[in-house]
Amino acid sequence: MRCPFCSYHDTKVIDSRTRDGGRTIRRRRECLKCTRRFTTREQVDHIPLWVVKRDGRREEFDRQKLIKGIQFACTKRTVSMGMIEGIVSKIEYHLRDQTIEEIEAQKIGEMVMKELREIDEVAYVRFASVYRNFKTKEEFLQQVKQLKE
Image (tube, rainbow, N blue to C red; front, side, top):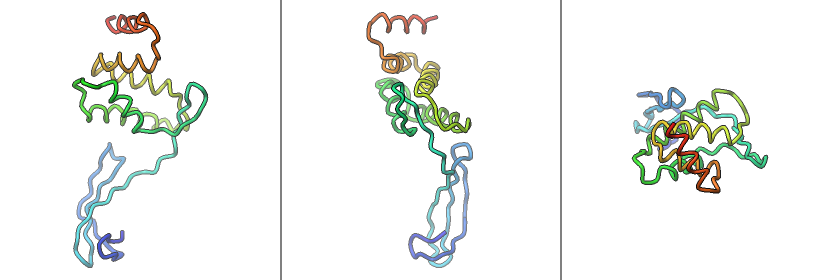
């Protein structure tokens, strides 16, 4: 590893720690020439995961887009950003562990609703209303009725 300060070609690792269930490694390094310290992160390059939309279009999986959708459903709720990140990480890891290249958007939505239902019922109903594209109040009430059962 080249030092970012003096560009010397050799450094030593002082400390290594794993994150994200061993998927990321954080290393603290020291330059053998200038003795300055810096941090590097290593993670596996993933094969692109494609999301197949309802109309047949394909988009690359976008973690931030999923986070924003869940955040919108959780507006003014007691769901922390850490919980939202946890939901997205759990879903993403599950999808990548299946070693599939394509997944239907509908399946991702169902996974999100399953997770939200366990942590906040209001956020669950909000997400479901957008995801399932409710057009009438009866559809909304039906979803709430199912939640009660």
